[in-house]
Image (cartoon, rainbow, N blue to C red; front, side, top):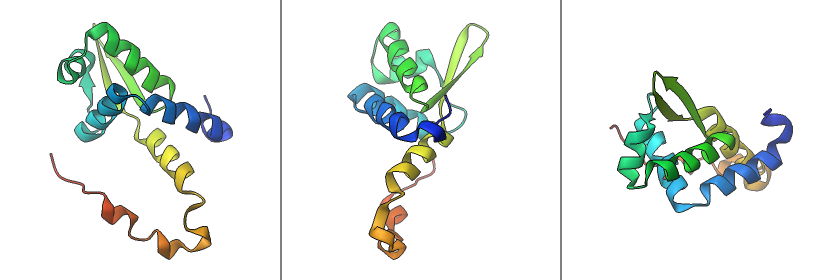
Length: 116
């Protein structure tokens, strides 16, 4: 899917994917672990969700462009799609501040990034 050519519809899909407690939790988990991601079984275990249910959630996040998967032999490793996340955040913020960027200048100050 070309996200940029269909951004409003993609944004609705992405926000819909995140509008579920388990998927939001999994997405945040994958953002925290970074680009190396986690194998599906570890994600299911950490989220305390049965593997078959987790597969459904991960597929929803992947279709929404927020998660990527890579097959490693018999395992599937999932990671946050940081490009998709940036696209969604940029879409949400593109009309921010009514043309006065100084209103949003400290927005990242509200985000507490911490080392693992």
